[in-house]
Image 1 (tube, rainbow, N blue to C red):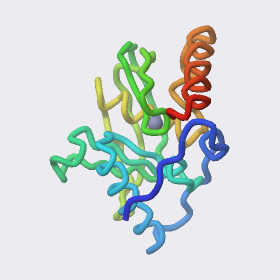
Image 2 (image 1 turned 90 degrees about the vertical axis):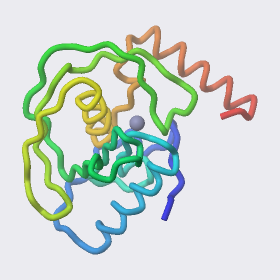
Image 3 (image 1 turned 120 degrees about the vertical axis):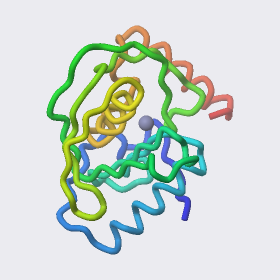
Length: 169
Ligand SMILES: [Zn+2]
């Protein structure tokens, strides 16, 4: 079932999410709903706070739903290692219509549990590393706007405020 995606300004997007203590049927439902919501919005990643659940679970799917084997479910993810730097344009389902060049590690290793309860280390590079770092940031209450230089962030938040006032956001 698709859930509404919360937008920039929703308090839950700025909170540190709580660890998942146990794999439960409720968590399974949440993950299914997050997958449907992400694919419905043609997104490549979604974190639980974006659907209003302050829990440490996020999804990444670079195929945007075209290849089921590409779906990564990361429960209690922990980035162990980051290397290098990449600068690419990036957006967020919670900040629609806004893109910005965000500095991210070129590669990383993330340790996370999957939905079967297995803990794995995943080595990621390029776009996958970027997507994972973006989603893990959500679990720490950080949006991509927060990774920008202040003057640039200020310009974008002004633009969002203008769009909001015009009823276009
Ligand atoms: Zn996002």
